[in-house]
Image (cartoon, rainbow, N blue to C red; front, side, top):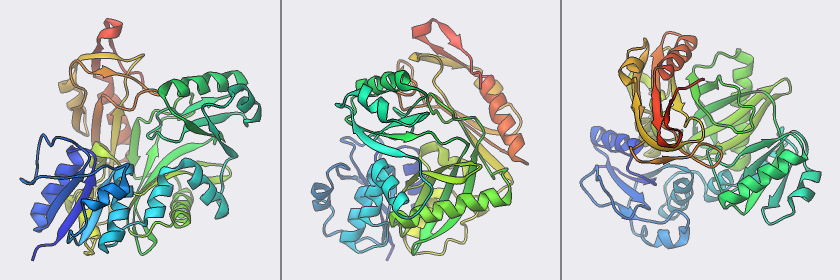
Amino acid sequence: MAKHLLLFAATTGYQIRVFADAGRRLGVDVTLATDRCHILDDPWGDRALAVKFDQVEESLKALRGLRVDGVAAVGDGPAVLAAAAAEMLGVPFHPLAAARACRDKHLSRKMFQAAGMRVPAFFRASLTDDPVALAARAPYPCVLKPLGLSGSRGVIRANDPDEFVAAFRRIARIGERDLQVESYIAGREFAVEGLITGGKLQPIAIFDKPDPLEGPFFEETIYVTPSRETAAVQAALVETTAQAAAALGLRHGPVHAELRYNDDGAWILEVHARPIGGLCARAIRMADGIPLEEMILVHALGGNVWMAQVDGPASGVLMIPIPGQGGIYRGVEGIERALSVADIEDVIVTAAEGQWLVPLPEGSSYLGFIFARGETPEAVELALRRSHAELGFHLAAALETFRPSI
């Protein structure tokens, strides 16, 4: 009898299709549990299960009685429901409490602190509080982080009380209720992709983020692996990720961690109970060219993850930022030139004509993605930058063509 995987995901996008394809190759039945009201493209020829990621108990009712051999999740909200479902259905995954802690910036900071890890000074505040009074408490420079948002959305650096008040009011206009204020951590930023089995971390890839992420906003652009850092720095990043995952109680499944490194050592920023998101997963290719998602599927079902090592010398992705003040997307020029750059594998524009695009800190999307593979990390980074420079995006609000400057 074929094994059965229950996949929790918010959309039927790229990663979902890869899971579906992996299931077909391996002879695994994959059922999608999603919060979409209408499935526009059903990759398995079957109807998905309707759930609500923010209503765990109600959603579990729709899953009772299922017989599955494993669960997987794409996204932070789906990971919480996947954890609850795994406990109910008796299959391995991260514990529910751990998945919830990953989504709570304040709780996770407290857990890291209790575990004796290096953490910045921090405190929780409400956006109904007096910003002037909060500004008097804040360490400078500091970073304001909305607790209900992800992906750097609403995250703003403040260097003095005036900037704090301005940042506070800007976040309040987004509609958030609570935020965390923490001292700014200087240093280079990295991401660690890994797999946890029985509470033990197996690192898959360390990504360098070569662009300086110093604020006032923290828009990520380039990820490149393998890391160009020394073996000692890489070991510190992996060890800190393992300590953070243990502090949160993560047990079984993928993890994606964000860190900084400076003269004091490695600092954990966030740990997520899920893999790197969306199209960015294409920057990681496992042994024999196996996609990251196929490895996750095999692991979720208790199989041998022999392929859990990155294939090829170097790879990377550039998340194309929204230029200027944003506007209505009207088109792009230069894709053929961008594709012709040496070491470029693909250029994908995800913005749709007529779409209103808002940059960070209010926005949460990108114009698209550029992928590269080459002999060295340096070659990959250079290819990504050259390819990006060939693109010209037309946004109606500015009545001009913006060209990238990174």
